[in-house]
Image (cartoon, rainbow, N blue to C red; front, side):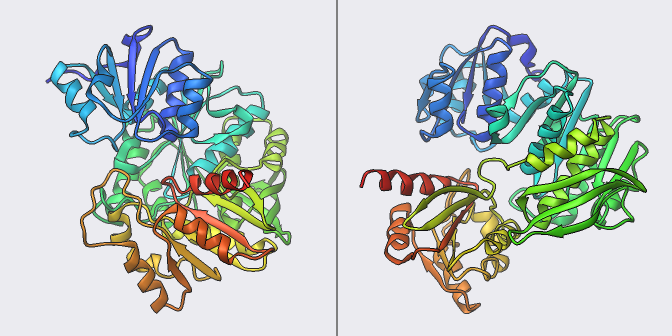
Length: 466
């Protein structure tokens, strides 16, 4: 069997990335450029990320997957969304070009750092990694960073620091985080998702356990002390263990926690009986308080100046695509959130509901046929807090349409549950319905991890053309 290629052997050589516009891949592309690799890339769609790589970094990016795109490459990197029948993968196999999957690349890049932090969980990975990034940078710990979102304060999704610390979002999809070699693991929660890959919630828990088992004997595990499944896994660990949570039974917890009228929490952070600092958050929701606790717990284990870390969390304004205000049109505020399963959508809408508004619009792009089928009943009630729900067609992502699940079925089920739901198949349909029915003071929240954020861009661009 051929050995897996290693990225260190291709410095200065031509590396081609299939799916380069993805949030993780575009960030990895920037890291590789800084380390001296010669890049090309391809993607199905022209996006902000592909334009930025081409215009700001000079990376030749082709729109559309074609066999000739891999010609001349010394190494090819692809994501799990790029299936074996993709023409570029077929061609690289025919030509015998070495290739590695995205998660393997991230693990190889992390190997060069003695302090490797992986943030994992079903929900909140990007926000927590972003918070921790800002805290570590404010405390002058100078980490290298790879995150599945865009952060204004690092100018993108990656950063190359000069310390021995590498901070990365550790994604459980397809068990890809098992390719990493963490010395510190932050576990936010364990929940049912990615059930096209996992058998059930027990299989998910078992895989998180395998990730924690990657920690060395002197490694650090930081987990949500109120998540029973995480605590079961912690029982089996022999490394250093810390918990965070809302109660004083956890190692790190908030005292004097309260929320303002917009749902933004403020609290005193305690480690056991020791006051570490005060936080006044600029991002709303109890789940963001939990994310902040996880980030600050990790920062404390890294010997960060906690006054600086808490101040950084008080300044944290969020990552792009996380309850992000994209525009105000006709007196209507348009937000976008990356939430793509029912639990995340429900959380995002709970935050939206706290904001001043007339009517609350939920615009949902269901993501992948398998997820909608497995979590079907949860989709039918997750937007109950909204006044009106618009549902676009299902975003296939890496999947082929099985023919037995459609957005119309979601809408029908929502209506049976008393939700005012309307099927607006395309972005044009959705924009037309919104413009015909919204009123000044309304709040529109688009949700999904596919390309639904482009609807917000489309609405804004069309407004500028008037």
